[in-house]
Image (cartoon, rainbow, N blue to C red; front, side):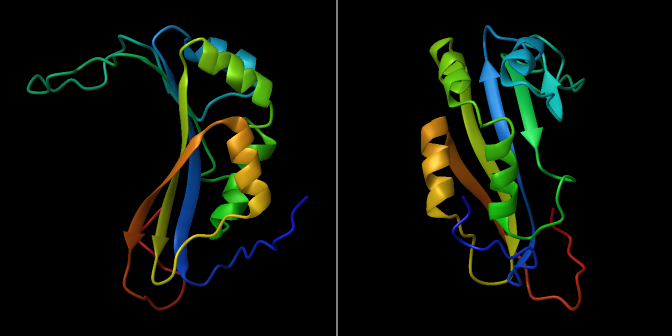
Length: 155
């Protein structure tokens, strides 16, 4: 139940999206996909090469990664819309998320947010849903000068 109206044109935001991030030393992306019930937008396997640069100390992933991003799923500039997509999708089965956590998976939601002034909003319903899912939420904030029109270099 959405009590607070989402404003897809959120005038002080120039771009936003949210990503559910699940990492594990034991559960691979395919197993996580089966349990979550959806495919990731990006994933990698433990031991997979992350860079070919020889000057980088950790050239291989030390754990499995499973990521579901709302980038491209919504043009909304209101991060609440992007949180709704996650809460209705990969975050909806809180029992399965707890099962994954009990088996060593770590998870969080990262929100990319570019703005000219002000900041993001989340609703009480979303706070309850995120708390029930047991995920930390953090914002990657980028302040941009006000620009004419809808052009933005962010997101």
